Length: 448
Length: 125
Image (cartoon, rainbow over all chains, first blue to last red; front, side):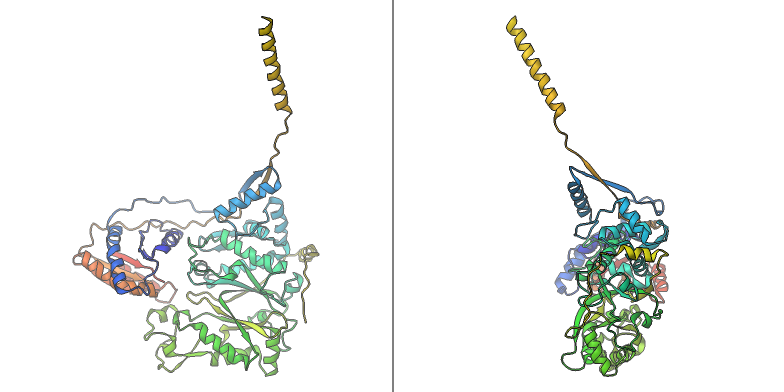
């Protein structure tokens, strides 16, 4: 295998994860080949060919012995000492930092007592596997999820949301491996819909996407810690995002059904779930573009953002996009007769780009990889290509507070096959008792 | 003699006083924090050993697996030229097989494996 220099550790890690740890990998002397002058490409190729030939003709210097298959085990107990509790915690924090087990923020120590308390948030046995977390295929047991939830500062009542999110993230349709390891600047976004928002005092109003509420912040953080500690992806090792994404700290947005226009179905109903249930959706978000309705028709504005977001890269085609209306935006478009279905249809029609802008002719392997239908590849230069495969790929809901009218158009990672997934949150039998535990952990939510 | 005795008993007294002071000195308390490890056990996949190496690439059929991203496409022609210069009578053929899952992927991978004596993968971005 031939790879650019910065990706060498990523390739070794991927090969080991795929069961081929002895794969011979040659690292080129450059960080990237795309855009290099011809003379440099010639030099790099000639400079690497000896090593490539040796990789195919000389015996490997090491041969990895087979390992016994892993089984889920009870979590190991770790000890940290100090002259007092503060010093012991500091020693724990330093260990976590050195070993890349944390997110750079202070951690709540996951003592046995704290984890037992967190496990009250579920009726599932502690060794039940909720999901296998890519890229390292960490076994995501209920116990391991609870440990990371404690570290994040979550409350036991948040466990149903966290476990359901892990189930969705580890669904092959989300392509967590790609999302964790890609160089594309993506991060998972969680979206909550349903009665659980009120139960858990999740902020659905002003700055739902920002800090300040225990549930929003710690659920998002728990997911990030799970991706770090169970998936074992780490920047520069096997997570190759150049700049990263602010949403990687863990972001949770909650639907504002209180101020959704009358007659508009909720997000969970649009996703085929019942009105009386609660759901969590996961999405491989890329960038968050502000949409407003201060000047002109917001639908035209959003359609423009859809076209720009595709970025003249046909290999971003194939995944969903998300439109988050603030209550102010939603009021205005509803007065103009729009519903989520009509918004989707209008955006599908208006959010089109020319075939010439879309990509090279022919699209070649990009068409294969992204299942781009032949009729699109065959369009004339001025023919129009929809920026998503189907109308239903445009997700629409209301969140945030009633401000000047600024929502988000959130575009997709696009270079893999990661899809917007929605899962029903199942509640344990002791749900009402768990909610009593939340008394005192609330922050008032401003609804105006 | 009396001075020697005096000196010996003085030294003994000093030593004894030192021992008493040491045993009465306050010890540094140690607190131990015990936590559960957050790291997941890794699901170890079955190992696939690499194929036996060729004695030489001369006259061999080398398949090139190109993941079809821009970086790989940019580098591939130069790699082919460098290989042809370095290895006499080498035969090269490229398959563009992206990472994504698509219906004929297994068929394409099999065709690559069946044709090739060895495979070079170019992993671009």
